[in-house]
Length: 259
Ligand SMILES: NC(=O)c1ccc[n+]([C@@H]2O[C@H](COP(=O)([O-])OP(=O)(O)OC[C@H]3O[C@@H](n4cnc5c(N)ncnc54)[C@H](O)[C@@H]3O)[C@@H](O)[C@H]2O)c1
Image (cartoon, rainbow, N blue to C red; front, top):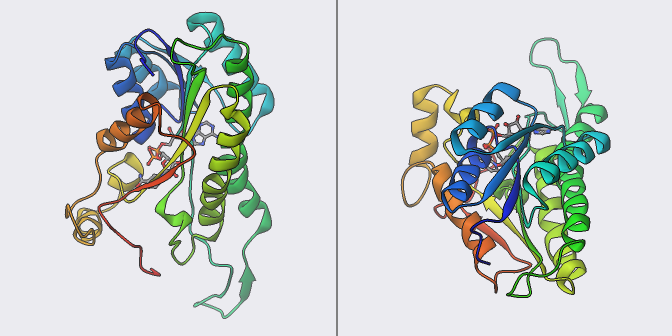
């Protein structure tokens, strides 16, 4: 897909992997709309790349509808969707408190919240974006659009405390092929990236020795991934017309230990 002059929506584009992808797309002449909860950061990235910020919560149907309406009115129908909005937490399935021995299980409302953001939020944006792409004529290549989702290596090797996060990301991996098949007849491609450990604000808030230890645990290169490296793969998935229905780890060969 020749992306120059096309429109993209990047969810979670105010920060980390999404912001890097928004920048990389803009550098290729793409008009970018950023969907995010973080207004100040989102507006700053949008201003830097000459894009548009839309205050969107991916867990809300009305909010996502309003975001697509705003983006399409300003920039035209998007041909590219990159789903980066997501979050994680660390809670065990059931555990005994070290202090007083109380036994607790994972709070189900918290489990549901992670699934709603990472899995349902991703699918909500895919479904609504694909419906919009279907209203547009195919490009010269026969393509109507390209969608990139963000799972995690935790979809395959989730660590202690990552049950909700891993389940949500495995859901994203699970939807890639059937969604690609659903949309193949209309020329929309769908792929998913499973990042390892990347240098994003989330992780860089940790003490230096923790970040260094994480970097040293990567077989090669012995460092965290750079958001630009994620963006390079996202761009390849968008531009390469034969890339479809695939889930790809981008992780320096790391396989996560139980903790
Ligand atoms: N950084 C890593 O090492 C890593 C590894 C594997 C997977 N991932 C995944 O990559 C994606 C991006 O992560 P990141 O590291 O760039 O984190 P980040 O926190 O820097 O960016 C995530 C963005 O998503 C936004 N967001 C969260 N909930 C939202 C909602 N309900 N509606 C709209 N926006 C929302 C946040 O405001 C934030 O700007 C996430 O899905 C994350 O799970 C990250």
